[in-house]
Amino acid sequence: MAVDVNAVAAALAGVRDRIAGAGGRDVDVLAVTKGFGPDAIRAALDAGCRSIGENYAQELLAKRDALDGADVHFIGQLQTNKVRQIADLVDLYETVDRPSLAREIAKRSPGAAVLVQVDTSGEPGKGGVALDGLDELVEQVVGLGLDLRGLMTVGPTVGGAEAARPGFRAVRAAVDRLGLAICSMGMTDDLEVAVQEGSTQVRVGTALF
Image (cartoon, rainbow, N blue to C red; front, side):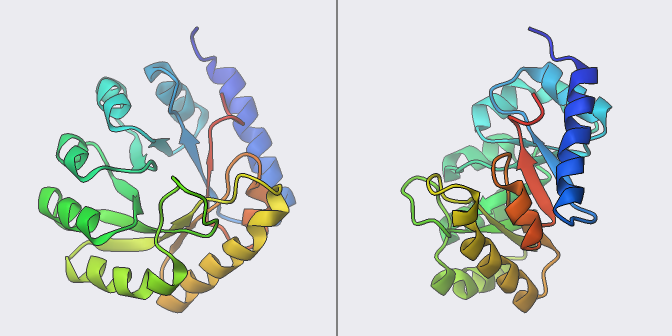
């Protein structure tokens, strides 16, 4: 079923209203198009989104022809052996969480823009470096010549939006301490809390499509 650009535009306006209601200023909306066809990417761009986020390498590759003009963020857990396949498509890697991945990105895409993913939930499968290991990983990422733009985190699955607040606050503090620009946190269900705690980018899919 085709994605209706007018519906996406209306949904995007609703997301921006939510951001404004939470006190957000200059917060980017990353349109998460995983699970949707290439027409979702075109609809998101036509509706006014500047950036799209994809979670899976194979799905991103299948949408190659729809990516023209899109600022592509990779937001899923990334296996090192997949980096080579998508290096020419990705503008920002948001989920760098271990030295081996940083090394592979630096090898396949020297100087690539990246975010370091921080684990603030402790839930298995979400990825991310623990806060007490953040500085060491940041040093390695920078040492590899990658362009470290900021940090990213995913809120906990249980406990509701408020359960994410302490982790979001800690990541924002780390962004400030490290002098970084991007603080990517908050999704459809917890974006207000994320914005209140200083997010500069929310990642939304369900709210748009």
